[in-house]
Amino acid sequence: MDRFDALQAFARVVEAGSFTKAAQTLHMSKTTVTQLIQQLEARLRVKLLNRTTRQVKVTADGAAYYERVVRVLADLEDADTGLSSALSTPRGRLRVDVPSPFARMILVPALPAFHARYPDIQFDLGVSDRRVDLIGDNVDCVLRGGELTDASLMARRVGELQLGVYAAPSYLERAGMPTHPRELEDAHHRVVGFLSTRTGKVAPIAMRREGEHLAVQGRYVVAVDDGNAYLAAGLAGMGVLWLPRYMAEPHAARGELAPLFGDWRFDPMPMYVAFPPNRHVSAKLRVFIDWVDELMAQSASG
Image 1 (cartoon, one colour):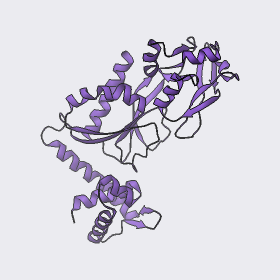
Image 2 (cartoon, rainbow, N blue to C red; image 1 turned 30 degrees about the vertical axis):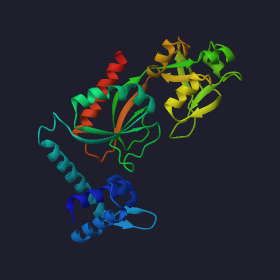
Image 3 (tube, rainbow, N blue to C red; image 1 turned 180 degrees about the vertical axis):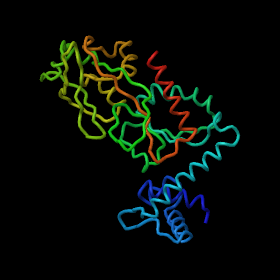
């Protein structure tokens, strides 16, 4: 039995709650993972996991052992990266999930600069607006906009996005130019809905002006759960958009979107990097979070 492989397999099964998911993330067969756990339990003479056909639960002894295993694996990673100037040259694979518009317009174009600074970090980049199971999907961190609702996650606020309301000229020609946000709730106006991955519902647009506070729901013909599709629907004239300015301004400059309600204000959208609380914050994750913080500051000043 390879003790490192056995410890790693045990930790992944506990985190994923499944032998199948653990095997997938470790690129092993389920049989291999099962054998490693059985060998580990035989060596320790302790039952670490209770297994049924439907679920895997850690025993009390297994939970205590898991806490020590996580620290051991973290120390081993630090020892590996500690050789040959680890802090100046972090290395290894980093699994990150990023919203699709942010990836396309901000993060991916800036990646060459990150790679030049940290050439030994390899990215597995998930690009989506879906809700990610960080532990089950074996993701190191996610970058998300909006207030975090999962209190179990660790998070660092890396900046905020300024917001505005926009519509395509083709939409305004058809529906008319609204002069007040409440007009978006009239029968002849439409919004493009953005579906929350948490609730599956379209959130209202919140705005304020000189003590006046509104939450405008609006009606929609189409609602989507992806930022790029949301923008595309607005550009196609399907309705009014509520957008971060970094997404809207290039299209506004080309006359493809028109800003609405310029005297109204919107609370900025906070941006967070979130990661599992039981994961060691490695050198590679630490420098990535610092870099995203820099990137957000540059985007805000630009």
